[in-house]
Length: 633
Image 1: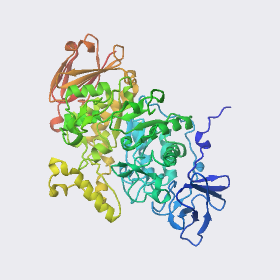
Image 2: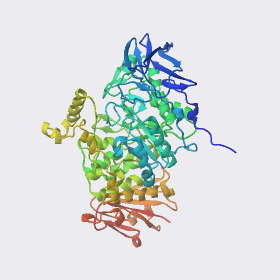
Image 3: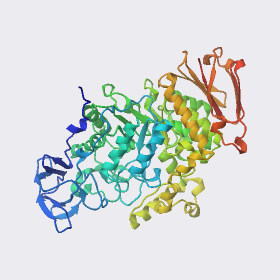
C-alpha cells in the first residue's frame, strides 16, 4: 500500500531564531557589531538563567541548550545591554517589546497531506484583514468563515500582513516581528489551523509580506546590527532596508529565510510582496527575484504563487529568469482600477489625473493588462511602464477595490457606496469576465456598507504624529485644503475608527446586499464552469461607441462567451454593426446583471435596465449601466 509523501516541511531547517533540534533548542542571531551575546531564559522571573552564545565568523551567535522547551520565554543581552526580543522570534505572546517564545512548528497535526496548491490560471483572490474580517478579529474566527468563501467561488485567500506589530490593531504594514503571527489574532497554531482548514476546502492561502521597511515602533533590528538599514537609499518610511550595501548579503538572507519560513512552517501557498517599487535594490539580482529562485528550489511538493505589488508596470517582474526577469507569477496591475474609478466615480486627484476613464482607454487596458507602457505620466513627471506584450493576461492582478484603494481615501469609502448599484453590478461583471486575475476585497461580494479606514494603535507620542501625518497627506486635495475639513478625517488612533471598519456579516442576508452576493456567486460559478473563461490568453475586446464594451472569450469556437457591458446611462448593442463578434451565430442567454435575483426589489432598481432581441443578431438595448453574458452553443 502506497502512502502520500510527507510535506516537505518535515525537511525544513531554520537558520535564524529558536528551533527544536534533537532534545535541545538551538538559538541563532546575527549581531555582527557586538562582542558578546547572552541568552536570557525566563527573563524577569525567579527562574531566570543566562547562557553565553558562541560567535561565528559571519557575525552570528548561537548555541543549543537542553534545559529549554517549547513555550519558554527568552531574550538577548547585547554586550550587557537589553534584554531585547529575538528579531526572528516565532511568537511574541506579551507584545513586540517583551520576551520571545520558543515555538515547535513540528508538533502541529496537518490534515492536508494531499494538498498540492493551486495554479495561477483560474485563480480568484480574496483579500482580507484578519482583525476586521469578523467581529472577533482572530485567526479562529476567520477560519469559521472560510466555508462561506469557498461557497462564494473564490480560490485563494490573501491575508494582509500578520507579522506582529505594536499595539492591538494595525493594518499590518507596521510589522516589526516579521516571523511572528500577531498575538492580537491568536497563536501560531491558530494560523496553521486556518491554513489547514482552507486547504480542506480547496482554498489556497497567500500572505502579504513587507520587505521594504520596518515598522516605526518595536523594530529592534538596529540594536542587533547597524547594517539592516541602508546608508545609500531612502524610502517613504525613512532609511531604506539595506539590500545592496555593506553586509547586505546577511540582510537579504534574513528576508529569504522569512519567506521560506511562512511557506514551510505554515504551508502558505504563496506570498504577495508589498510595494516592491519601494525595495531599493541596485544589486545584480533583485531581492524578489532571489527569493523566487530560492522558493522554487526549496518548495517542490506543491504550487507556490509569488506576486508583486508594484506600480511601475514592469514586465520584467513576470518574465522568467532565462529572459532576464524576476520569475514571479503575477503583478498587481493598478491601471484597470484607476480607469474604472475615473470612469465611474470621477476621481481626478493624485494619480487619477493620468487617466481619462474613457471607453477606449479602458479597452486598451484590458487588452494589454495595463495602460501605461512607456508613455509620459503627468503624475510621475516622466515615462511610466514597459510593454507587456507576450505576457499572459492572467499574470496581471486587477481589482475594483483593495485595501489601499479604499483605506487610503480620507473616509475609507468603498466603490459601491459612491456609485449607482446598477453600475457596480456592471463593473463586477466586467471584472469577473476579463482574463486578468481578479482580486476582491473582503465584503465586496455583498457591497458591504462598512468603510475600511486606516487604523493604528501606537503609543501616544507616535500616535499623535501618525494622526497629524494622515491628515496632512490630504492637504493637497481640493476638498481638504483647510484645517477644519481635515479635522473631519477619522483619527487612525481612535478605537472607533477600527470598529467602524469591521464587516457586518448579517448584511449578507438582506437586500440590497443579498442580491449582490448572489451576483458574485453566479459570476464566479461561470468563471469556474465555463471552458471559455479558463484561458487567460483568448480575448477580443470591442469598443461600443462611447457607452460600453464587448468582450468575447473563447474566440471563434463553440462555447464562446460574449460579455456586453454598458457603462454609461444608456446604449444599444446591435451585433450586425460588429461582424467580428459573430453576429450570424446563435447566441443563448447565460446571465444579465439585471435579473431580479440580483437587484433590490424597490426604488429605481425595480424595473430591469435592459432588453434583448435575439431575432436581430442579437440586439441589446440598455436603459442604464448593466451587463449581459451570452453563450454560443
